[in-house]
Length: 123
Image: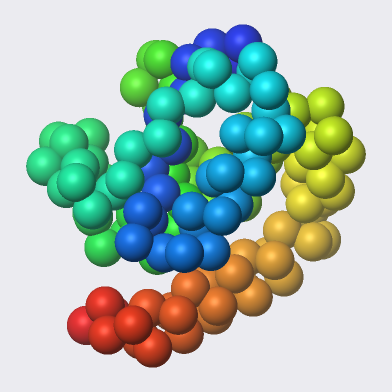
């Protein structure tokens, strides 16, 4: 996925933490942020289904789509997003380390499920 290409980010717009992360990303990204389109997944259920992504799966894990329609999710989605911002490139490298990815995925999945249960949005 080219760092210069357009990227659609399907994120949970109903999540205050996700909204803060988006705002922080846009501030840090500066001009590079103009190639990122933020899509509140709560308004894109049909679009996601048409792309073969279950909206519930998108709620549980960040999904990004490049210009070619390729979708990455989870840690790979975060890496694709972070690589566009100079100050986040080292973090993208770090979270991409083979031994660290599964551990981060475990903690991220646990955090998301706990948050959604607390909000009453996890069936």
